[in-house]
Length: 207
Image 1 (cartoon, rainbow, N blue to C red):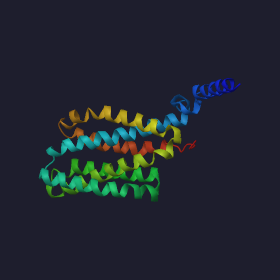
Image 2 (image 1 turned 120 degrees about the horizontal axis):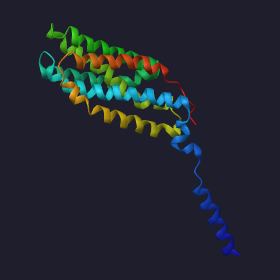
Image 3 (image 1 turned 135 degrees about the vertical axis):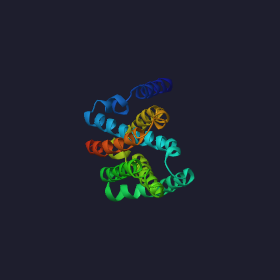
Image 4 (image 1 turned 180 degrees about the vertical axis):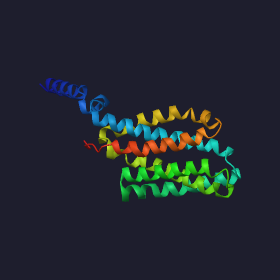
């Protein structure tokens, strides 16, 4: 009698373990058009930030002025941006904060391209503007993930975005070696495109 009860209990447990809740699979969420759009938009955000981050880090050696001063300016901007990115997100929300910071970096890129060569004194300030917006968005992308993806899909979404950004960032080194002005044009253009595309991301259910 006891043996039969134990066998029935183990049978029920194995049946429960064998069942996979459909909502726990990635394909369940990828069938939702809204989540697909959000995934495409956020992947572009990640690719833009990662690609431009490493591209300008390699390209800074070609900027007019003192390379050490320009590098220190970029490092200082990154330090303060990482501290303030979350605050901007909390106060302004995901879309406004990312748009503002992307436009800021785009302006910094165009200033480097159009003004920096003629007035070397201002180059470190232009580097600060470009790196501040970029680094601020990187911080926001991590914390805003829960705004655009359901809780059970958040980790998968970050994995997909991170994989795509890391893969395409491979080409940032080649782009940094191209003759100017193409690298900085691409730098600013990606940010301007991202400042528009982020508004296509829509909030989703947390379930």
